Every structure is written in structure tokens, then in C-alpha cells.
Amino acid sequence: MKTAEFDYKLPKELIAQDPVEPRDSSRLMIVYKKSGAIEHRIFRDIEEYLHPGDCLVINDTKVIPARLKGKKAVTGGQVEIFLLAEVDKDLWEALVKPGRRLRPGTQVIFSGGRLTAKIEKRLTGGERLVSFTYEGDFNSIIEGLGEVPLPPYIEKPLKRIDRYQTIYARDWGSVAAPTAGLHFTPELMLKLEKKGVIVTAVTLRVGIDTFRPVREENVEDHEMHSEIYSVSPDAAAVINEARERGNRVIAVGTTSVRVLETAGESGSVRPGTSSTKLFIYPGFKFNIIDAIVTNFHLPKSTLLIMITAFAGREVILKAYKEAIKEKYRFYSFGDAMMIL
Image (cartoon, rainbow, N blue to C red; front, side):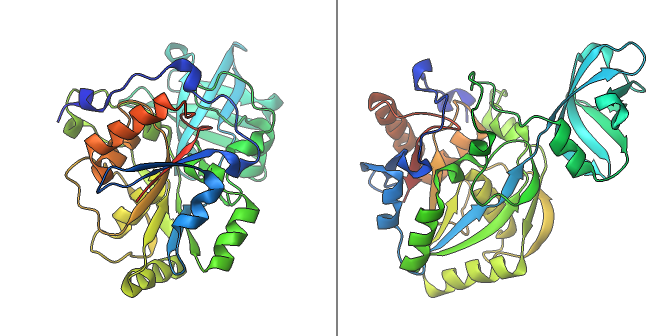
């Protein structure tokens, strides 16, 4: 299967630079995967497509201020360390700038020594293994020193950084937001609850690799980076009970899909914390989910490939063509799609 089959041309002006207000006023495209039919709605209308007893699964991860700016201990040269994933206590996989000058053994100082980093090792993909030394609580220090990273296609500074967090963000550890969840408001969640829709949370700590394009010529040759996920016993029970009743399990975002299809490989969602490198592409057998709420994704991305696996290539490319024609807003701060 060729990666080029998942390409499309997007006018730059359709890349959303700002989130809409309120969150649930974004547009919502309804796509029926069996017929290919399309409806155009507003996101708050999603209530009409959810039924009492349906289980809506959200990802409650929280984006960390992953971009750290410091100085080399010896020369005072400017350095940037971008945290990717926690490997062990005080040990992180990271991207660094300037890459060539940050060799193993180099020490970096942040905020006058409040935090110190040491480059431990260069990894095969060019990333670095970085250890940190500090006094106090690491998370609190990072919250004070770091910057929340926005995707490179967002060229405008964000007026309110909380708009790159979902309203239900809880679990500290992601370097990118689960963007399908950005459309929900407290008022909308309350309406769904009153209707009898069951909302439960899982966690996937989103890594930057999720959003990178597939560079291999053949889709099957791409390898995903590992991401940590967690499913509580209560969440697993709620999801499995919904399936046993015959109600739908609806994943909010591709990150929730990865958790559910990893933990539910046997057909029943297992609780626990582990890591996943699951890459979903056409031919994959879905065991848990019945519908997906998602955003419009980058060409050749693993996310676009995943939803194509769920709905079919022709259906998704038709929907994207329609979205471009109707001037939907794309990517992280863009509009949404619900695949039924």
C-alpha cells in the first residue's frame, strides 16, 4: 500500500490559526461510512447523533510545557530542549537545538540553575536522552519554566494557552493535545449526561510522532513510536458493559481509538497501564469502536491513514474533498468530523 494514496492538496488558508469561540461552535461534518453520505452541522449538534446508553470515550491527557530554553553550562550558548517522552524518573527522550553542538556529556542550565540537564545519549532518530537534576517537584518546575508547544503549522501566537487543552485535561504528560476533544464545552457535556450518554476517560500520552507524516514509500514499513496509555478498571467496566448491552462505543479522537483497540485486542477492554506502538492502517480489524469523532488531519499522516482504515479510502477522500470545497477549517484548531 503506497503512502502517496493518502495525500491531498490543502489550500494554506484553510489551516486554522485560531480556535473558534465558543468551542462547540466549530463545524461538524457527519460522514456515514457505509453509504458515504455527508451532512453539514455545528459541533454542538453532536447531541442529536448520540443516544442514551452510548459510551463516549475521551482522552483526559494534559499537554505539558515541553519546550525548555536554557544555556550551555560552559559557553553560555542558547539551547532548546523539547521533551518528547519520559523514559524513567528524571530521564526524558527529547529533541534539541542546536543538535550538532549538544553532544553526550553537555550540561544545560535553566533559570540560573533551578533546573539542570545533561545530554546522556544520541538516539537513532537524532533525538537525545536527557537527564535532569533539580530540587523540589519536577512538574511544578516545568510548569514555571516551559512553554506549551503548538504545532508548526500554527503561525500565530495563542492568546489563551488553555485553548490548547481540553476542558477535561487531567493527566500531565503529553506534548500535543488530543485535538478532537477541544470542541467540547462544560455545557455540552452536561447536556450529553442529561440525555443518558455515558462519558468515560482513558489516557494516552500523546507524542509528537503521532502527527508526523509517514515518510516511507509503503505504509506498512512505517513504525510508530511507543506511547504510554492507561485504562482504569472503572473505565474498562463501563466500556465493556456498553458493548454487552448493544450500545455504541464512540471514540473522541484517534488517540482514544489507539487506546481502545490496543487494550481491546481480545474483544474486551482490559484495564491497566502499558505502552502501545499500534499503527492502524487499512486492513485492520476494529474490535471495540463503533464511531469516531475526529478533526481533519495532515496528508500522509498516521491519523488520516487510521480513519481511512475505519471508513474506507474512497469515503474519506470524498469527505476531505467536500470539506475543502465547503471551506472547513483544518488541523488542530479546525473543524470536526463524526464518522458513523
